[in-house]
Image (tube, rainbow, N blue to C red; front, side):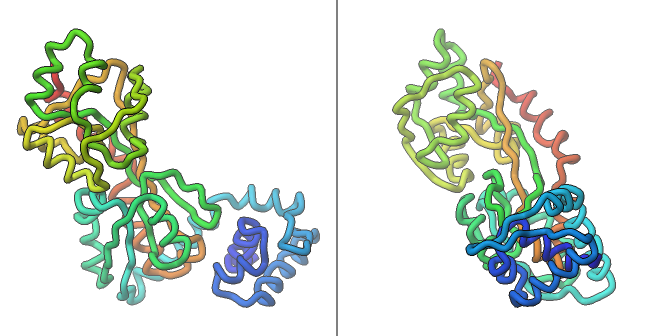
Length: 311
């Protein structure tokens, strides 16, 4: 069985449609049907029931999909990376992700790709925009802190970090002498990533704090802007540790001790499965996973932030 036929099978299985799979793979519908028919002959059992609007996987298809799992992506990625090492991968790579993560965590890890002759265009957007741009083929790879739920996309966790509450030094000093930390914290000006307070709600919930009707003083989808205000003495917020470890170490900001504990954020690298057939994209994915992989994260931020935490 060829990798091409298996890739076609997986796309039809995910999409539940010959026509949608053909569009995703940039193939004709007859070609997709031929690939599926060839697999059915090789296996000796039908893989899909043809319906009026799409296809329905058979038990044989479910078994084959379970056996393949992520192995197909890994095999195609390995082959594409091998091709990349022996051929010219020059061209333009379109990346999209959260602005603060792209600037502070990703940009420095792009050097091997730039040195190999790949040109890179960096775009920014929130989670839904990242998903849409990658799923529609406008960008090659996306980086998002949102879970990957779009069935058209594949994803790997590329970076994990602690999410901590931080404040200006003056505010932290006031809270240090508070008899009711939760009550007094929620009375102070809040800086937030969005009105849904996604990062903040999770942290507050874990620490047993109720925040009904909590309204931020400022909303901005680049956490570096919130960080700047904290360093100028205004407000508090919740953010990934990598964005504030230097400021905590220098005393410009203070980590607030969580009554129960801090939370966690996971950044995902996402792509269209068929995109890995392009050596440039497969090579870039492999490089980024290696350089930002979770095995490095345990060392990030912990020592500096623990030493600098509010007593």
